[in-house]
Image 1: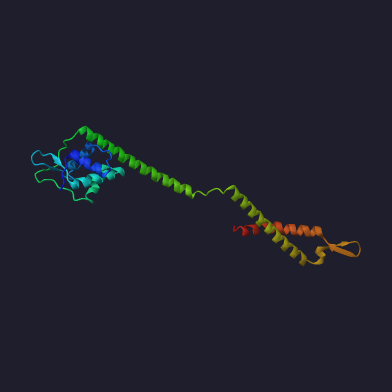
Image 2: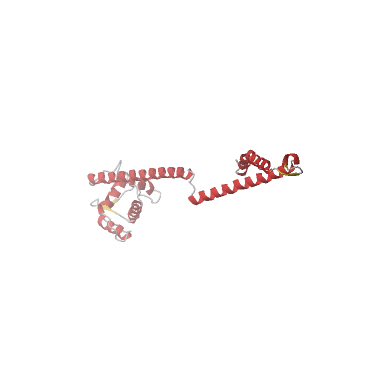
Length: 222
């Protein structure tokens, strides 16, 4: 089992992160916070009562460092530690919270920074939720067709209208042909009769006008 004082312990953590810069006071602050909240105890030497760190503490420090890189708050890390490590209990002769023996102002700054990070995380989450809400509303708004789509729609409508007119015209012509000659023909001179084209035109035009709207709605499914 390896044991390290805080300075050597910090170097071990740096090695785990390829000599990434990390301050000894930061490491010390992490473990002082764990003790002040009675989450995890740091062993002491018998003679000087100086803190010494072992391999369990090293794993915990590496875990905290990774979580901090993932933007976890210390409060969330503290709650999660017990799910990953068998944390060290406190000696039976120690009752109540462990007194904080570090720089109080430094601790205040650290807690203030934690609050800022937590607040920013909450704000970012709320902003993302609002953005998703408005994105879903925007998705439900019908999109305007492109100029090409509008042109195609107008062309298709024109084709349908012409088809309806042609069909009605053919129906009108068929009906006109079934009428008696007295209605279809007119006298030309004394002995000859021919089709009355004016009456034929008016009949076809009236038939189309009377049936056009109804037939067009049927074609468009209205």
